[in-house]
Amino acid sequence: MIKEFQKYIEDNALFSKDDSILLAVSGGIDSMVMTDLFLKCGYNFAIAHCNFKLRGQESQRDEDFVTSFCQEHNIKLYKKSFDTFTYMKDKGKSLEMSARDLRYEYFFNLLKAEGYTYLATAHHADDSIETFFINLLRGTGISGLHGILQKVNNVIHPMIFTNRTEITAYQQEHSIAFVEDSTNVSVKFTRNKIRHELLPLIKEISPNFERTIVKEIERFRETEQVFRTLVNKAKEEIVIKEQDKVKIPIAKIKTLTPSRIYLYEFLSEYGFNESNINAIEEALDDISGKQFFSENYRLIKDREYLIIVENKQEKTDQYCIREDQTSITHPIKLHMELLKDLSFVRIPKTKFIAMLDYDKLTFPLTLRHWYKGDAFFPYGMRGEKKISDFYQNLKYSILDKENQWLLCSNDKIVWVVGQRIDDRFKITGATQTIYKIEIDG
Image 1 (spheres, rainbow, N blue to C red):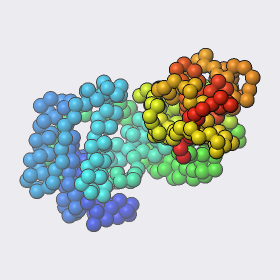
Image 2 (cartoon, rainbow, N blue to C red):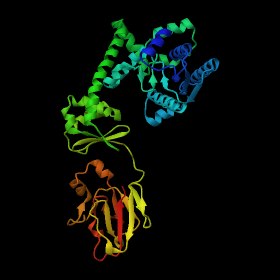
Image 3 (spheres, rainbow, N blue to C red):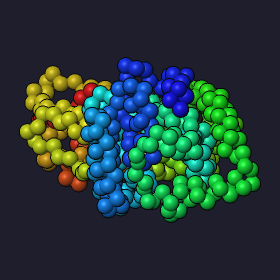
């Protein structure tokens, strides 16, 4: 197995002799065989162990076993304990996903802080088959059908070349010590249910099933490469990435066939699941304004675009501007000044500067977003107009409305910032002092 291990690493360019590798070691048979192979091959590595505090004394036994092993072989060890149940309740995730999140966050932080090149896990061919079925059941699209890849960014899987039977034979031949996780036989976890119930049933039907599925997974990987090339080309041509949002032209989405597949590939990276995406596709011809949510993002169906933004909650919807302030930087950058010598003042022809009658203002002024029922008297227009109608005339999207600030004096709107001042606060022949407020940058 040692030669096969080395050949697999070289053939797939998993890492070089100069790289330092962090091994994820639980103490179980798979990770201990992987550690033995790393030792015998003389690779540069350290070990990281996670204690999820899920099995009482058994969890501590695993940690003590890995600690003793590292001390005996003079291997650098990193270890950390987690309050997994609390994390699971706070995040509303399954136990399996919670443990996965915690360990990979810890591992990646170690890679960055300690300067390791790659993280190596002991997943093998049987794990890849199980992952294939897990992803098939979850509905992850074509990307879930390739099983476990040999290398993904800075995570490597150097044991994918072998399987559980061969690992057990190697462990017995070399008398490698390990600890057994009692939960491995429990079928309350999805992976174990597939391992202990589904796969044996399939083997009854097709004894050579494992060999067949490994070949099929490899074929899926190759098919995905072709598929990914087409999707990435379409994404480059269609998806518009701006500073704070992503825009996808609806008309162009409709030209793609099948559009739902492309939508899935465009949107899944933002956490939208298949149910979300089906609903989004059905809403393409609906009126604008519909919104869809993933855990961290919001998608707005606008007139011409699907707009994706992060879910961000402002701590407050109202900000004060004191009379003595000359500038603010949050929530927008504004510069303010008083003009008393009016003989040389010229009214600038730009929407980004408001020239207001200072004596008509009541301080502190406030900046806020619009409320239902808001109205003002737009300069240059007759009578009162609802802010909602004013926004509609500007063809504002939901996002534009949310990002638009209103400058107010008491309960009166003074300036739709960057758009129009209120006629009641305009400069007249009786104005003695001008309050100039300008969008800065």
